[in-house]
Structures are given as C-alpha cells and as structure tokens.
Image 1 (cartoon, rainbow over the protein chains, first blue to last red):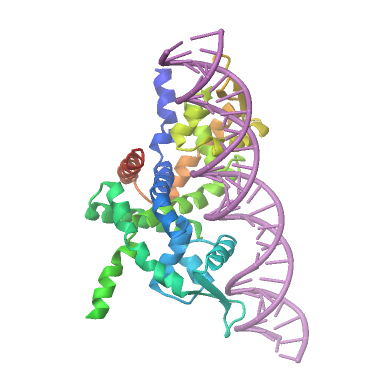
Image 2: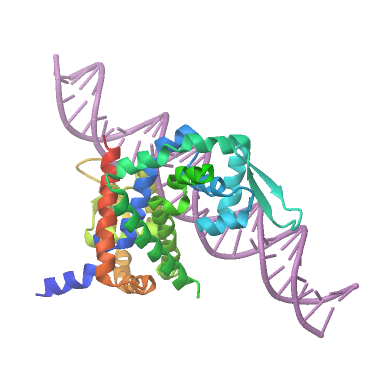
Length: 154
Length: 154
DNA sequence: GCACATTCAATTGAGAACAATTAAATGTGA
DNA sequence: TCACATTTAATTGTTCTCAATTGAATGTGC
C-alpha cells in the first residue's frame, strides 16, 4: 500500500512519461538520420536550416533568420561565418542600417539547393510514416512549441 | 505556370513543412521553459534527465544511462563529473568489471528528488495542454523516434 | 595459455546553444 | 542639439553533442 502510494507520486517524474524527453530524443534521432545525408552537402543540421530559410528568401537580415529558427546571434554569428568560409553565403552590412548584417546566397549556395532536393524524401523514408500522419504531428508539435514560447514571453 | 511548377517542387524544402524543424524548435522551447525551474535545483536539462534515470533506479552503469537517454560516453563522462562535483552522485568502478563505472546517488542527490517534484506540473502548465493530449503526442513522437533509430541501426 | 576481438570509458576536436556583456548605430524626448 | 533608450551583432564563457581515437579490461578461439 505504502509502496503503491510512492509509485503513484513518482509517476510525474518518470522519464517515459515526459513528452519533453520524447521530443528531446526524437530531435537527436532526426539528427542521426540527417547526418550522413547532410555530410554529402557539407552541412550540419542547423546550417541546413539556415539554408532552407535562404532558399525561400535570399538577402535577409541575421535577425530575421534568428526569429524564424528561434536562435540568437550567439549561435548564428559563428554558424554564418562557417557558411561564409564554405563560400555558400555572403555577409554584408546593410547600407540603410549599419547595425544589420544581411545574408545573401552565393551562386554555390544557390546551386546547393538542387542537391538538397533529395534529402526530404530520404528522411521521410526513414520515418516509416505517411505524409498525412507526419503533417498532423508536425502541426500539433508546432502548436505546442508556440504555446510554450508564449508562456515564456510574458 | 512556370512559377507554380517551381513552387510545387519547392514544397518539400519549405521549413514550415518539416516535422524535424517542429521537433527541433519544440525541444528548444521546452529547454527555455525548464531553464528557470532547473536553475533553482542547480541542474541543466540533460543533467535533470540523468537524475530522473537515477531516481528511478540507483547504482547503474554509465552505459545503461547512455542507452536510456540515447547519449554516448563523450557526452555523459563530463556531465557526470559535473554532477559528482556538485555532490549529487558518486562514480565508482565496478568490482566485477573494472571497465564499468557505476553511478550512485549521494544523500543530497536523493534529496533533490523532493524538490524536483514540482517541476513537471509547472511545465505542464506552460504547455497549456491536457494530460491526455500530451500523453497521446508523447506516444506518437516516441514511436517516430524509435522508427528513426531503427532505420539507422541497420 | 596466448593472440585476437570486443566492450567500455575517457579524451580530443569541431560545432551548436544560450546567458551575459560589450559596442556600435539608430531613434526619441526634452 | 544632446542625453538617453533601443536595436542589433559580436564576443566570452559554460555546457552539451557527436565522431574518432585511445587505452584498459574482459571474453573467445585455438
């Protein structure tokens, strides 16, 4: 009886009951799937995310990339310097506002998009999941993320 | 027309269509929620995960913790040394197999469990989500993670 | 019993992440 | 105009993460 009471009180602390751990470990699992695919492109996963943003819209301020990916300048500044060293992007100060750094794709960076097109399909295959299923999960998780961020923003 | 064709071909590369980014950004959002709560306990989030494992079962090999959390010795060795420096755990070589390092809670580490009990509820509140909803998402995400890991394990 | 493979932890190096601080540019109110 | 606040990146320090390597302990086949 006392035993059972304790076990019940411990339920909230059980690792397998925590959605945050499911998400944390799923993020690592995705990273493991992406790694060999992105190695061929010479990108890490966060670098790939930056390139996805730039392939959608080129010549954006660092700040915009940070807002899109929920990353700050302490993360992005060195990451973008590595992408510049790899000749995939170019960093220039804005003429209108010298505080801003504008990020533009080089021809190589633009060209890498074609090589990246096969990546999503291969990840999809590894997930062994249908597109509608994944799409539904994606929306739920993004909504949860937005609620968490909203809870912190007050 | 040509415009539309391009847009369709670009769909798989759109950031907002990628479940991996939803998960990646949700993991960061959780981290942001946990940070102030865990600061009071003197723990980081990965350290908290290790403590969750130990609060379930004490005196386990490093390797078992790694398998449970999907982390390797390169991550755990320095992390565990910090927990030992904080007097929350004790690391000892196994008598039966000198290669293994056994991790045991100190009285302080055991005691921290009581202070940690309030954490899950506060995270739950920030998620603004019902327990059944979270539980269902958790199971789906964990299943996706397991399929991804299985795809890599071959 | 001994060569060989395996297991396990530790180390090293590169990259990612955030907090806190600094510094420069810009905007604003008196 | 000038003091002050705000915005934006960059820097620094700590921690986490993995890949690759090293080294010690253990197990196995002959």
